[in-house]
Image 1: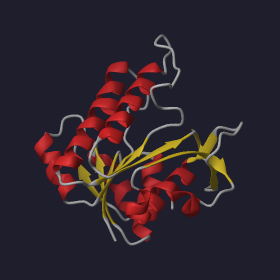
Image 2: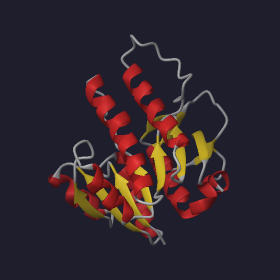
Image 3: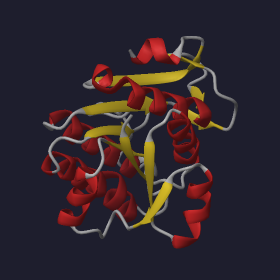
Image 4: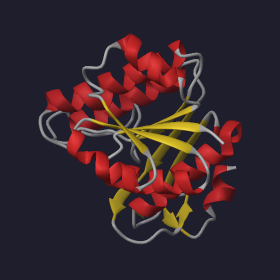
Amino acid sequence: MSQVLVIGAHGKVALLAEELLVQAGHQVTGMIRKPEQADDVRATGAEPVVADIVSIEDDALATLLAEHDVVVWSAGAGGGSAERTYAIDRDAAIRTIDAAQAAGGTHVVMVSYFGAGPDHGVSPDHDFFAYADAKSAADAHLQASSTPWTLLRPSSLTDGPATGVATSDTESREVSRATVAQVVATVVDAGEAAVGRVITFNGGDQDVATVVS
């Protein structure tokens, strides 16, 4: 079983994924920014650690990652200013990737979004541009890195139950957070078999384990 660090551990997807990872026998640490979130993380069976991913020193981050086999990036600015979006979704994500390399090759499982990439097509004058641009830059940095990586690109998130997935484009362009959590946990379980994969998905009928492997 793996030692797993979840960054952005109080997010809706992250909390669901932590519970699944713990149930699968992994030892899970959840990085959170606010101490008052610790009890929610503990309730999943994970052990909370309080640190701000934006301000943590590079050496401290690399040391933390060196204690883990896998880091799941599930952090995000959640909207708001473009400045904060770039600080978290691009800059902090890139620093985490670099820290994973410095730690000796921690497997980075990056939760991105459906449509990210150099051809994301979002106009610079659109409110969504900073997020699309930041995520695309982080994804490109991950794919160019020497650390093991898996890139997840789910479509629009809903609060429905877990389902299978669809890896081809569909009209719904939706997937439940519970399904995304299942994909995260399955990727961690798959280990090397999932390294180097870009998994773009909607909700659907395909078995998650089959798609990941």
